[in-house]
Image 1 (cartoon, rainbow, N blue to C red):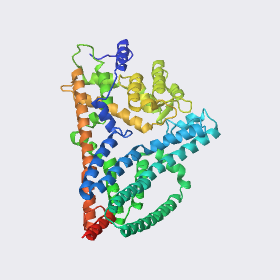
Image 2 (image 1 turned 30 degrees about the horizontal axis):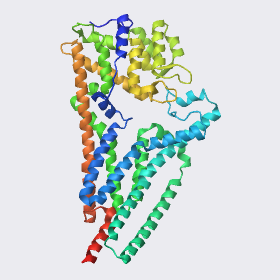
Image 3 (image 1 turned 90 degrees about the vertical axis):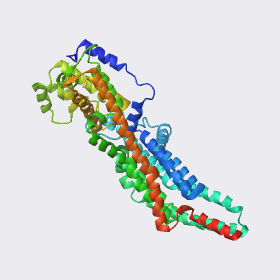
Image 4 (image 1 turned 45 degrees about the vertical axis):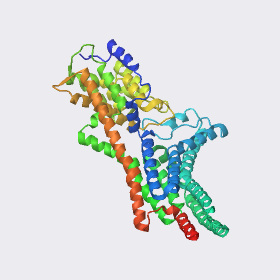
Length: 512
């Protein structure tokens, strides 16, 4: 049978045992969890490997080694700076801030909401003048890091790639051309350089307009808004590639490829995943990540004593999620905001045992906001419900697994919306397990089977969604890109290598 009281010694023992569970090494659950986490590079790396392979193969089929070399180099180096460039320049900026500017702290977030405010927390420790320097440094570093990474991929890398191709083709041509032909080639190269120099000058002018007036707004978006970050990076890279293209047709190829790829990089995988969830009516089991699902499974199974047969669904949900009596409902109705201070809560609740749990919840799940202990309304409800899943101890354990040390770091920001969303996923998973019960009875074996089902579905959906995106990015889009160019130009050849193709034809004619 289930343990009846969350405060019993047996429950405390089970929690202690649960805390000893480790996830050492790389296992399938961690891989799928990483693939599902938009804050990690796992899914992007998986997609990018397919993209690079597909684009490189198609490039070789159309333009031979020359186009293959350009495409492979651009994709490998571009992906590196696209995924890690901002972080790399951020680290360089932090080193400058720490060792040259002598700032007391360089790594802190500027986002804030009713639950967390890192800048407010830091202002307790540092003076107003120091805080002004810190925020100015933060904004400047974010913008500079983004522009440097974007500029390298969009403007510098294409020029380097083109220069390498020119050198390779020049060496190849030297074996067949006479001195006069070589001289003409040099003149052409100089003319081409003059043309690209004009592009560079026009590019410089474009970057200057109005940048200072929007600095703080852009910096905030780049720090906190994922869509803003993605759009800024991609627009900058695509613009750079189009502006540095060797001719109009090559620029159009870049424009079509990058714009059509954006959907499959950022939107198609989650949309397909949600579609599969809806198709199978499994969102309760598959929205939460597999690592968290396993932790919930272990917490629920720990409530069964050895040899226990089964319990009713009602008893299971009561002990797992707790219940709200009338007095608890009155407390919640008295809280009119999403966040309440612990001192304000003490004016509403008089039960010392409840207040003790509330204090633990406040200290374990977020840092004090400006030196004041706070709780969300959801956390107050969890305290009042007094279930095993929503106990302060388990909440701390599963939240730390999900959000890491940032959970209680005063200098870090985690949106309350994101935390509340994860909290909802926990309840949805428990309720989904209860719905899987046949005949209204829950057993430890059933909980384990449901967890396995949840993992298999999550893994299958995630891999299928990524496979569709990878196929579109690595195969479909490159083929469409080349098809459009062939229809427009009448030639199935790389537009950027057109001048070299012309030279090669002239060499063959001269030999005749």
